[in-house]
Length: 312
Image 1 (tube, rainbow, N blue to C red):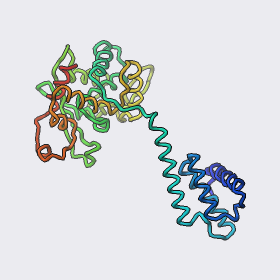
Image 2 (image 1 turned 60 degrees about the vertical axis):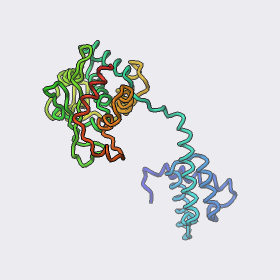
Image 3 (image 1 turned 90 degrees about the vertical axis):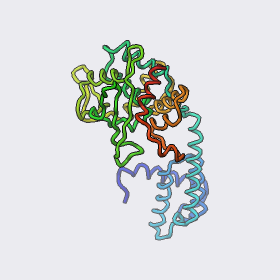
C-alpha cells in the first residue's frame, strides 16, 4: 500500500524494528506499549530524524493491522514518549551544533573601505558585474542599515538621484511591511577622497545597462564569454551569500554575513556619535518609548550616510 519511492525508507525502518525485536527477545507479534516505548528511547539516543520515528511506528502499526489487532502505537502514552524522545533528540543536535556556528559579526568601516577601494577605486574598469553588484548591495546594507529583504527586489525605478546630490530609495515591500505600504530611505551624495555613494550606484547601473523596471540586483549569467544580467529575475539569497563568502575570502574581510551590514552600520553609527533616535529611524526599528513613536525626522539617512562617508 506504500508508494514505490518510499519502499527503501520503510525497509530500513522494518530492519530497525527487527533489530529491536531480537534485542528485546520478544516477538514483534506480541509487542505491547513497553517494547514500542523502548524502541522510541533507542531511536532518541541514536539521534534519529522525525521521519524515522514515524516510519518505525508505521511499520509496527501495519503488522498489527495485518493481524487484525489494535496496535500499541496508538496509545496516548506511546505518542507522548515519542514526542519527548524526539524533542530531546533535537535538543541534543542543536546543542552539539551550537559551537560550530560562527558568531555573527558586524561589517566595519575598514571592511567597507577595502571593498570600495578594491572594486570601485582601483578596479573600476576591470571589476566584473558580480563584484559590482556585490559592492552596491553592501553599500545599501551598511550605509542604509537595511536587511537583505529590504533591498533584494528593488528596481531601477525605485532609485532616484536628487538635486542636492543625495539618493532616495523607495522600498515598496519589506519584512516589516508585508502589506506593501512602502517606505523611503536616503543616502548622502557627499564626496570623500573623490568617492561618493551616488557615483558608485551610477557606475554599477551603467555598467550592467540596467534601466526602468529592471531589478537593481538582477540574476547574472555567462553569455558568449561575458557576464550579463537577466533583468527580469532578481538575484537569489543563496547566490548573494555565495558571492559575499567569496569576497570575504578574497579581500580578507571579517567573517561577515548578509546581515552584517545592518549590524555594522548601526554599531559604527553609534560609535560616530549619531543619536540612537536617528539610528532607529534609518534602520526602521520601532521603539516602545512613546516619544520615539511620534518623532518624524526629516530624511535622517542623508545625515547618517554623510557622517559615515566622512569616517570612511
